[in-house]
Length: 508
Image (tube, rainbow, N blue to C red; front, side):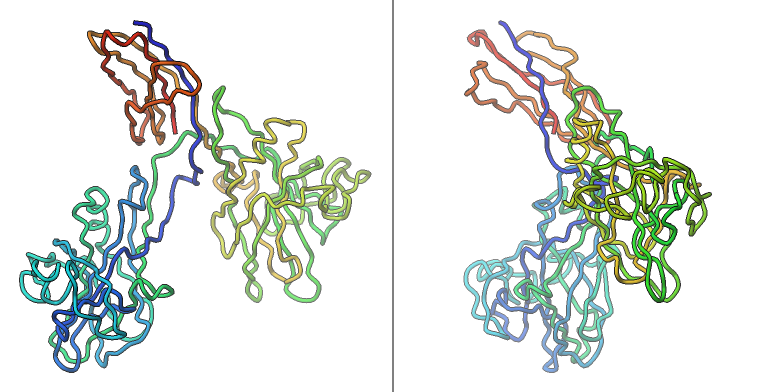
């Protein structure tokens, strides 16, 4: 029985620096259990009430989030924070409120009356029932351990209107729901002072969209194949010393000066895209710049920086020992300055360079910088691919502050000469290599094939019985990403009645 092996790769997704990400998940359901209205459902109200009111009646809130439906299947959860907002405080006394993991299903419902909800219908949660009318809580209002876990997952002291964050032990709960979504019944929000009058608080529900509950999850993904490139040239254009070259100094962009008329500066950075396996499909490119100094005198303004692809060549030069601040030194012939891309005879179209002659008017990427730290310019794949196709036009990027009028918008970025290599500009390019089937064999009534999948990639094994272009590929199996490169062995049954079958392996 002839067997065909077809190999190709698919492109999927956008990479992230160090594969770290944050997601804010909205509430998937929330309601209040009210002792004041024991057979009412409050699932459509704009608030979640918890605590003891001035009539000695208790309320408890329920809320849940779709964790598994919002996180990638191969995510590793690092940190979890739930933010609740008291939009209008009704309490007299402060109270500690705790989250307890629910262990029974319940129905949010949709009843609203501006305050007390409405008579529950089938399947809605009330003070007496978790699924009205037939399925009751273990006791009215729910109790531990039958309805929720006794130990609090997180607690917060609440005294007035404002935002309150719960974090301490929520990761364990969210991890449970991530790996077993069938066990995700959310949390009870319970006042720890249900014996004290006037501790009841109203937290915004998901019907109050601006203040709705929000679950923020920080997570990482397995590292995808990538190359990390450091700049091969970088320098700054410095209006305050227009004939100076700063090729060996820190990079600076923005407006310098604390009084009077500020002077502009712009940074130039160039990379050589290389190091990818033959035939690889590039999937993302991200530039990381490290801010090593911000203006200190009279404070500093938050700055937004744009990245533009350069359209003219320039020469890094070697002036300026690596000091902060550094204004370089008098340029030698051929070095780049504020006035010239090749000092002193080849000027920019305007001092400091200008679009569209010296750099593209279109912005390749943007980021906002407040303080020291690492900042990222994303979605740069188009520029990198352009340089790979046109290496003679690879002149790098220019970093331009969007606000070059206000004072103290300048930032010093680490250059390739920085004493700390980790401060140098870095371009991370992720790619998908060409899949290769390393071994195949017929064993009994099975066809076996093996291949290697790099860390962080999904493997797809598909088949069809013809090479006709309109024939659909059918999925044999998908293999989720792993943290390390792994060898996969896949076995497919076949019968003597099959004249032929073709297989292919793809990566995502």
